[in-house]
Every structure is written in C-alpha cells, then in structure tokens.
Amino acid sequence: MQATSDQAGRGYIMVTGGSRGIGAAICDMAARDGYDVCINYRSDETQAQAVAEQVRSHGRKALVFQADIGNAEQISDLFQAADDNLGTLTALVNNAGTSGFIGRVDAISASDLQEIFSLNVVGSFLCAGEAVRRMSTMHGGQGGSIVNMSSAAARLGAAGRNVHYAASKRALEALTFGLAQEVAGEGIRVNTVSPGVIDTEIHSRERLAQMGPQLPMKRPGTAAEVANTVMWLLSPAASYVSGTNVGVSGAR
Ligand code: NAP
Image 1 (cartoon, rainbow, N blue to C red):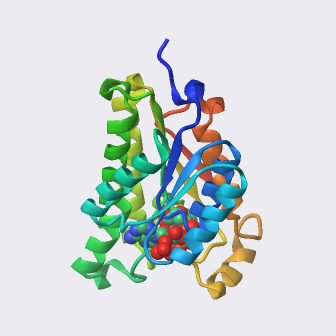
Image 2: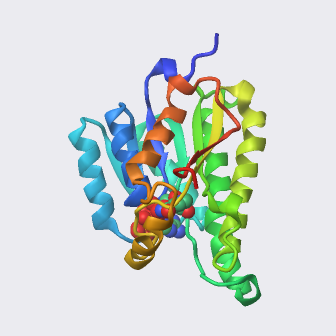
C-alpha cells in the first residue's frame, strides 16, 4: 500500500490568503491538527504575523510569505520558500480570492476581468500544479490533499452584482473535478468547498447587516464554520472523498 500524508505525518500546509478571514481560521485549525503552516498574504503583513503567532502557540512552525497569487513568478518563489523552511508539502488550500468589480456584465472592463481571473483561476491552477509536482507519488511525493475555495455564487449566478466572480469560481470547480481524476491514483485528493455568506472583511459591514436577516439561518456563517469543513476534507476521515463540492451555505 502506498504511504499517504495521512499515514506519514502532517508535513506542511500551504494556505493562500491566510492572513485573515477564512484563510486565517484554516491556518489556526491546521496548526491545532498538527500541520506546520505557510501563511501567504498579499498586502497586510501585520495580520499575517498575528496568524503566525497563533500557529506557533499550538507548537507548530509558521512561515509568513508575501506573494501575489495573481503573479506566476511570485507563486513559484512562495512554494520554494515554504519547502526551504517547512519541509514536505502535504496540503494546499487555494483560498486567496477576490470578488473584484461590483456591477453588471455590460459594465465590466477587460482589465477587471483579467484581474479577477488571474487571481481566482490562473493563480489557483498554478498553485495546484506546484502542489501536484511535490505531492504526487508519480513525482516521488508522499500524497496529500487540495481544497479549492469556490462560492455559492457559482451556483446562484450573482446576477446584477458579480457574474464574473461566479464564473471564476465555476472554473475552480471544474479544476477540482478534472484534477481529482488526474491524480486519484497518485495519492492526492482534490475537493471544493463552497461557502455562502460568511462574516469576513470581503463584505462591507453594511452588506452583512442587511443580508444577515434575509439568509435561511438568519445569520451569515463564520470563518470557523468553513474552516471546519476544509479540515475534515483534508483529514483521513475523508479518505474516499475526492472530486466533490461541499457547500457551507446554511441552506442558501
Ligand atoms: P478576505 O477576508 O477578504 O481575505 C482575503 C485573503 O486573501 C487575505 O488574506 C488577503 O491578504 C488575501 N489575498 C487577497 N488578494 C490576494 C492576492 N492577490 N494574493 C495573495 N493573497 C491575496 O476574504 P474571505 O472572505 O476570507 O475569502 C476567502 C475565500 O473564500 C475567497 O476565495 C472568497 O472568494 C471565498 N468566499 C468567501 C465568502 C464570504 O462570504 N466571505 C463566500 C464564498 C466564498 P491581504 O489582506 O494581505 O491582501
């Protein structure tokens, strides 16, 4: 039987956009679960360092690394630095994402589209490729798990607000389904988590206050509620779960 990350120890987890919101909650829970953690961020080092302190308080190693996931060269530097400092990659969460421009399809510009797709889609593809080259048993790795962060918007369409965001997240779901089949025999599982409205800084306070009572559970979700699902998908408890999409949308 092939050794997997589940059997051979935790190694390190790469969390893109790990400095706040859902990503920060994943970093904290991953450290509690025994992973060393690479916390990627783009602009706010102070927040990323605070997450690193939490990781270290659980007795795990933390690396804080600035890289724009919309930039191929910076992605390559990020993974190299993480290998040098943390050892063996066993999990990737493609979490960094933007909702970008807010408006209708007939108002969006080419540069807005390029910005959203470079981060949400191209960046996630490139990170997945970096992870597969390290984790696949075909490349001499010990296996592992990838979670892509989609959104309920991919199913709902986000009409009048950000159809471009919904489309970018649908693309991530296709990445999950196809890649899961490519690497299923190489010790790697790939899944999607699709949150509904979650209380993070991606939303304005006004929008959350307005939307909360209209949601089926009469409240937004928490970052921890999403992180719990991600950690389950990464864990041995989900050892036969791959190529699927788990909603965390409170019945939305
Ligand atoms: P958030 O609070 O806005 O946090 C975003 C994180 O991504 C931050 O750590 C930010 O770092 C980082 N980031 C942004 N652009 C980046 C880039 N170009 N390169 C690297 N890092 C970058 O967002 P969130 O709500 O936690 O969302 C996390 C993921 O969940 C996203 O993919 C989002 O689409 C998805 N999601 C969220 C919701 C929701 O309701 N919150 C619902 C569905 C899906 P800096 O601050 O340093 O830039």
